[in-house]
Structures are given as C-alpha cells and as structure tokens.
Amino acid sequence: MKEKTLKASFITFCLLTLFNATPTLAQTTAKNTMSFENWVDRLKNQAFAKGISIETLQNTFLQNKQIDLSANTEQQSTISADKQLQNNLTFSKLLLKQYNDTLFEISHLFGVNVEVLVAIASLENDTVNNFSAIDVLISQSFLHPRDTDLQKELLQALKIIDEGQIEAEQLKSDIQGKLGKTYFKPTTFRDYAIDFDGDGHYDIWQNYPDIFASTANYLSNIGWQSGKAWGIEVGLPEEFNAKLITVNQQKSLTSWQEFGVFQADGNELPNSSELGSLIQIGNDKYYIVLDNYFALLRWKRSTEYAFTVGQLVDLIQK
Image 1 (cartoon, rainbow, N blue to C red):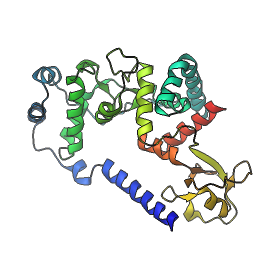
Image 2 (image 1 turned 180 degrees about the horizontal axis):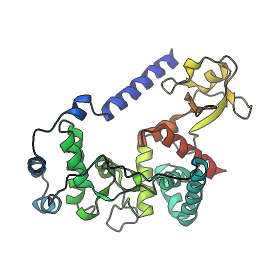
Image 3 (image 1 turned 180 degrees about the vertical axis):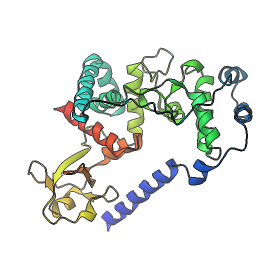
Image 4 (image 1 turned 45 degrees about the horizontal axis):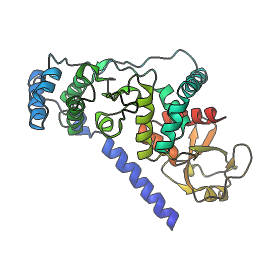
C-alpha cells in the first residue's frame, strides 16, 4: 500500500511539473493584437508600476529589437557522442584540478558533490549567451502575449539589473532567455545565484566560483543528495514485463530485485527501500534511476541531459 501511495504521489508530481512548466496551447498560439512598439511600451509601463527605477528602464528599454526566435544557435557537433563525452570528461577534470579547494568548500557548504558541479559546468561550457536577455524576453512575450510567466521573467530580469547584481549590457542569455553557464531563468537567478568570491557581481557567465556555488545552491534545493548514486545499470530477466519500463513508476530496489532485475555486472541489487524507476537508454541498456536523476531532470527537462550528467559523474569518480 505504501509503495502504491508513493507511486501515485510521484506520478502526480511529474504531471504537475509538466503542466506548470509547459505553456498551454492558447499561450503558444494566441496572436498579439498590438504592434511590437506598443507592446514594448506596455511592458515598460508595467515594469514601472512594479517598482523598476526610471534609470533601469532607460538603460534597458532603449531601441529594443524584435529577435528572430526561430534562429538555431546550437552548435552542431561533428564528433561522435563518445568523443564528446570524453572531451567533457577531460574538461571536467581540468576544472576539478584548477578549482579543487573552491569546489570542496562549496561541496561542504551545500551538500552537493564536486563531480556533478564540474560535470554540469563542462556540459554548459558551449552555451551560447550572445543575446540581450531583456530583448529576448520582450520578443518571447510579444509572440506569446497570454503567457504571463514570460512577463514575470522579464520583470525578474529587470530587478536583477535594478538591484545592481549585474549591468544591463552584461545580462546576456540564449535564445530562450536562459542565463549563463548555469542555464538559469531570471527567477532562478534571483533565488539561487551566489556571489561566492565576494567581488560584488553575480557572474554565472565567466566566474567559475560563482558558477559552481550557484549550481550547488540550486541543486541542493531541487533534491540532489551528495554521496548517493543517480542510477544503477541493470539487466533484465527473460520475458520481463515491458510495461514496468517507465519513468512514471517507482519501486523499491528490493521490489525490483524480486522482479528479477539485477545489476549489469551480474550482482544482485541492494536490499533497500530506496525508490527508483526502470528506464531504457538506447536499444539495449537499462537503468534504475534514483532521486538524483530526477533532480537533474528538474534542472533541465531532458532525459538525454540527465543521463549524460550521470555518466560524467560516474566517470569522474572512477
């Protein structure tokens, strides 16, 4: 009964997370009846009413450009996935060596192991942040006028500038309005960004102590637990019920063992009440993913991303 209750609660969480994070059809398809210039004026007046200073508005609402949000800014890799993973591993180890003392101090403060911090930093190293975050968010909200979350994120971005955390011209984002090597929304930035070296700037673009500390602060708040695995590679018995292979169903490791699931090296799974979901990676690999995997999904909603971070963490720890 307890396991069924936990399963139901987990599925409810997943659905709520998906619904809360995904714009509705009306939000994504509604046409803006205003001109872009009038929309900018509307947003400017709203920001002023919310307490944003005249100085900040003058510095940010100046010759705003409507950005082509269909532009593909992702760099297309011409190397294999295995080679890319090795490159990420090499860079992770360089970061670990260069910032060893800082990383272990941050790990101790936030309870997040150093391996996941350098793994995430290596994966986000090539993130393109060439756009004005204000212009991106204005353009996003213009195309999706009913999506009030975008307008809230714009307001938070303006507050970041208004509070002196960063200069307007330095607040750069990707085409989605995500900031820095931590891939933060402006709301997340205000809640979790840290000026770790105390230089007066919350620099998640170039300053690795700030990047690591901000990453650790956020990860610790979304469920990452230091010292715990993200997942276990497993093998399945013959005639296994394929309906059990789904991220939306959790069972204890003991229960998975009772279903005949075993570790990929042939050893038995631990007798543990720790909950995990059985997933398939590629055509022939299976993993029981645990709480730390789901923390990575909360960081960025991508199973490929969460799995790659997990792989890097395991490789760094070897």
